[in-house]
Figure 1 (cartoon, helix red, strand yellow):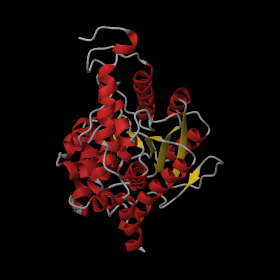
Figure 2 (figure 1 turned 135 degrees about the vertical axis):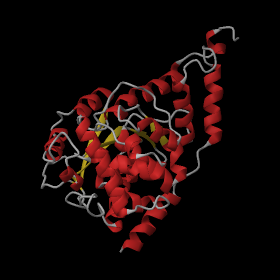
Figure 3 (figure 1 turned 90 degrees about the horizontal axis):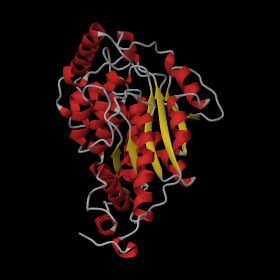
Length: 354
């Protein structure tokens, strides 16, 4: 069973096509013909170039976009690492499904769908809009044992891939990553520590808003979890299984699945970036398909992004998660495409070129 799952994951990774440098160069050429100094639109020009290279089209149709919110609980909450109780996870899932969370508000503004997936919530949830793909009922406490088995981890990655495949069949071509899971910044910090070499003091942040004593405890929990489980930094799935979470694994699948379908995926904050780091180690060819949205207030986020080779579009001092930063950046992606399509060229406008 485990071998079959791993083969399925490997087959998906093989489907990821190389970045199309020819299309990207055509986008550069067109951008340089527009009525502006070369490079003056900064990252908007870079985004347009990247989207052309991802899609193989100069102006891809990205009108149908979705943020995929993976939800799961964490056994490590037993260690007092969060300012909020674990019961908040299922409560917030229902809030997403009823359209009342921040990500729902921002998604409506951006013309995007919110796809909420129960991949590991420790509760029985039912809603007509909930995508039920439960792999575990919360992870085990990683400070006492591995968070998940390797088989569960690969299953969760495949769930993310399957959810993207389903959305692509419905016509979606741009994806954002979102998550919900009390305790998941602790798991993300542990993943970051193992895969980047940062110390727990550098990778552990305030999460839901813990105080100094809470932060010291969280650092200690990450240290203990790594010492106990000895995750293998050369094996991203081992790291994800031992100190990760089901929703993080699901997001790894979302990222790999988007790349395999030739779609851009906008990475949200710290937790999503930890998933992006794992995805980049599993499938290096997925990196050109990733767009970093924002710089979170979580302590290790910038170094985490740098280790992947990503640069965030915006810095708004956010640390909410849910996919909020990713959805905000859908607007910048739309802007980049509109500029490239609608601006006059020097020739068509009769403007002298410098």
